[in-house]
Amino acid sequence: MPQLVLGLGAQIKGSNSFDPDALRYFATAGVTGATGRSQINTFVRGIKSLGLYNNMVCWPLRSTQNAGTGVTAYSLGGFGVYNGTLTNGPTWGTGGITFDGTNDYILTTFTTGLSEFTAFSAATPESKLSLQLEMAKDKDATARDWGIFTWNGGLQRSYVFNPTSTLINGPAHQTTIRSLCLRASSSVNKLRRNNESDFTGAVGTLTQSTAAVGIASSSIGERSWFQGTISASILFNTALSDANTSSVYTLYSTTLGSGLGLP
Image (cartoon, rainbow, N blue to C red; front, top):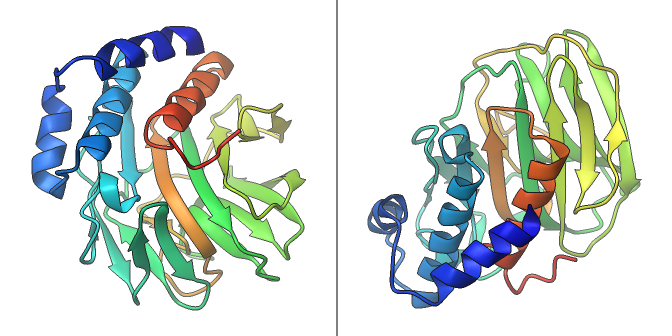
């Protein structure tokens, strides 16, 4: 499957054809650079070739792939429009948005409860010696769904509520660019770094709440802020198969994640 995606990407790269949904995103987010437009276009075409575009909302956070200025991080994908608001001054950059680990975060308008999902976070964390959330749908004790985080600079972890907390302890924390992927449903609960082997946890009926998806913090931006740079956050309303998880990772690393050094 990854080879099929890469082949499609090569065809698009060599043409002047832009997908209509990519064109709409360019106009909304103000993406004008040739490189950013090509990367987004190839990513959109690749996701569509997997039949997943209408299941996805993606927040490309590199300055060349989004507004690159201001406080709105525009969303991409056929699942709906769920823009995010930069709060307390995180900064745009060519590698993504950098958060200070003190009070910076992005709050999105995605509040839909999901009975199954897949969440990708491509990020370069710093060595913050405390809990730091990368992506979460979590209002602490009031409305908890899931989260991807690192604890005390040790393990990379995720949790889901189904309805009691299930924690997956993943690979060791690292301060180089990597992708973490959490998949959950009534039968799947897996955490993966890059395209490595999955770490698994118990499964059950997931909690579904109206908590908003937060990037670099909880859903209310009050604790556990992320320190480092986040290049993209991607959410699907389905638990991807192993093959599609690998395909999305490969597609991202060669399009929106090109040049970041993902393995």
